[in-house]
Image (cartoon, rainbow, N blue to C red; front, side, top):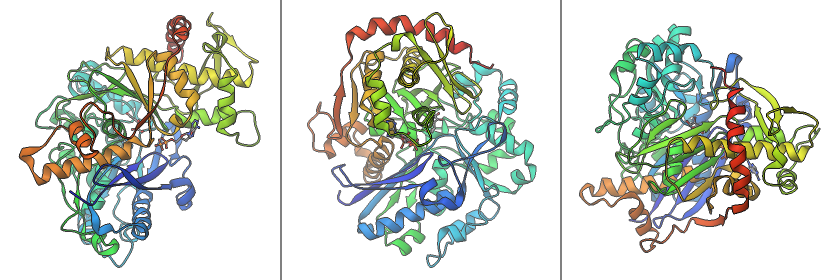
Amino acid sequence: MSGYALGFDLSTQSLSVIVMDSHCQVILEYSVNFDRDLPQYQTKGGAHAGENGRFTSPALMFVEALEKVFEHLKEKLRLDQVRCISGSAQQHGSMYWKRGAQELLRHLNPEASMVQQLQTAFSRQECPIWMDASTRKQCNYLETVLGGPEVVAEKTGSRIYSRYTAAQIRKIYEDEPQIYEDTEHISLISSGMASLLLGDYAPEDVADAAGTGLFVLQSDPPLWWDLAIEQTAPRLKDKLVPKPVYSYCPLGKIHTYFAQRFGLDRQQCFIFPWSGDNPNSAAGLLLQAERDLAVSLGTSDTAFAITKQIKPRIEAHVYRSPMKPLEFIPLVCYSNGSLTREAIKDMDSMEPRTWESFTQSLLQTPPGNNGILGFYYRVPEILPSAKPCPPTFFDMDMKLVQNIDYHTKVRAIVESRCLAIKIHMDRFQVKYDRVWATGGASENEEILQILADVLQAPVHRVLYHNSASLGAAYRAWHGKAYADNPSNLEGFHDFIRTKQQLSHGNESKNRKLVWHPNPEASHIYLKMFPIYEELEKRFETH
Ligand code: ADP
Ligand code: XUL
């Protein structure tokens, strides 16, 4: 196979793309930052914050960003050489397509821009996104009618969280019945983006479907949970694709719109299902079951692994692996990730500080931070389920402390997040002996050292830190090989290694640096775990 794969990543703050050659090497990357490059949508960190914990992003901003990427790529690359495209998107968020949108989408005119032609395609201009915390009422309702949080978690992999698509759809049905009526189709953001490329409604892949509250976690073949669909809103089944698909399933050829406007070869370029950012990162990091833990430090902080068997727990999540049909992704998620660290970095200063000064603070403070722990929820937190609260610090006697210096505050916020990851992930009893760090904040080597010290495992960082787009491009190549020869498909990991021309057992060329744990730090953190656990309970609101 020759040519290129495109791997997209529509994250909270940006739409990025990588171009990957047939040896799975990244040859080009490009990113559209929503706040900076599409200021007309007036987002902050890619989102609009509303009342009562509402967080949304404009659907048309996603459409326009996609076109912007192709305009750029057209100048840099022979797009007729692109053989396969897949992508990654922030999980849970949903797009509402208005009656008649499918026809509009199918018949786009390549002479005009997509964003112009899709102005009337959405019944709701704003997509609820993963940061949303406004649907407590709908979560309670759905959990009650479906048999309680434990039953729902057992069936779908997670209880219904505010950001889960089922709760979001129910809220729109209750609060905006006309919009619900006018909606002919509901996509996840991932499948919505695939739909733009395909020119028709694309199905959800199993991995991202598992973040809806509507999917039977252990189903093979993949199935929606009919009862949850019936209880979420009337006639919802008609507004969804009939079934989610495996992540490697070819969806079809690129839309003639992209072929004619940007020069892609419609006969040779195939679209593969988009998936969620965390499942794609698992693929990009080539995570191995029962061996690896991934920590993603993006707008959200997440920690996840791959397992062959799983017991869901109500304070965390289980998704499906996009690499192998019946493997699972246990995951913990914190909504106060990078933007909260940024706010701490710039605290008490007129001007934004540099990351260098933040790092200096980490270097000037010892492991254990002289016993100071920190909690700061700028936006409603998922784990624990907490309301926003200003930076709050405690000592090892669990007493509130004030008047501490900037450096100590910085370390407290970073270290306490690492303690939380260790405590919550260990409750899944997943085994790991190494950690893979990814996401924007994995640039910061001092954060990685603290992570290694708290988790007491070596922390690796891949050369290319956007593992979500890497995973999307790997999946596109793997899916293409499956489409070309379904009877002869290697496992995902072996397939990528073979393409990278690495012998078995060798690490991917994309794997690079390692931070080793300091064994002495282990005693310090062992004392802090139970204190952190107790303090965290104080912030839990229900
Ligand atoms: P997302 O994919 O969720 O949009 P990214 O994974 O691209 O976000 O991460 C972006 C974030 O990375 C920025 O908001 C910034 O706070 C953080 N970041 C970038 N460089 C550093 C650094 N050196 N130290 C800590 N955080 C950083
Ligand atoms: C995972 C989650 C976030 C989003 C955005 O459950 O909500 O990680 O996928 O990154």
